[in-house]
Length: 385
Image (tube, rainbow, N blue to C red):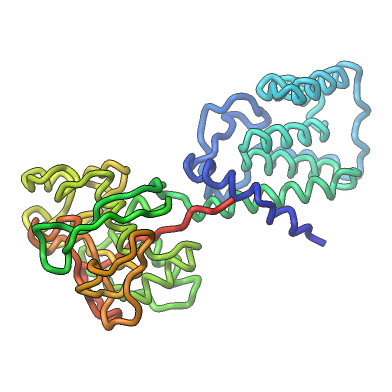
């Protein structure tokens, strides 16, 4: 029976942030070599690493044959590697184990030790692949169940981390929300403290939403003629956006989270300053859009590394729209008024004037409205220890 307790250990939450911030997991340039990485293996790679294929081929070729007896030289390498592993000299240990594998490609214990080292180094994809090699070569080993448990543990970490691919961590802290000189619903400006959170680097694309619609058995909203897979998905209502984010293991950002992320740690109208003349470097709006949205990520990012936070498409957030909410908003982690008729969209779009690309601009729309200038991005809470 699968040991599910392993995947629930609290330490998993602690390493997710490290893995998520890396976005890719470094791998090996040569099949069968596990030294210092010089190429990247993307987290969502579907093909097993070449080293696993080699092990599977070796196991198939030698099916029914006993594993070869260990030579003195190979035994010496294993003893050296274990000593190096205990002292956390991981790169040296892997180098020694690679030498042992060169002498005996079916040396299952070498792959087992490499897997443990890669797990200790938080290189979980490599850890999984090497442990699978161990099981392919010696499925009846006394440590086989332990090996399978480790694979499940590491795969759980990778699966959880995949939720946060392409996201940015916005640090906890206070910022000024709203504006003195804006519309009445932007007043009064007020200080808000938010816990740290993640938010998508890009608006959700057509390709991403297509995958969701296919898996979830939902109809794909009609997209404009100018749209491609790399454009932000549009013509989605609030419930479409909410459902997608939940399917992806995330949620819609709150209005306060969206504004803090959009401001990028600044307190000016546009994050690039109060002058709108440079807005075209950061945003698609009515003066430069050509009357259409554009593929995500083509303009400059803000100070947090977030793209298209202004212009391109309006973005749904989780809050109900309340024109007077800022007069009664809590100072810590506000989530909006309950049970109003409209939901909030933020950020402006390709269709509107520069003044509506200010960070503080708030717009209320019916949750079932769909527009070719309206999309969304997702957020996620930071796991607590």
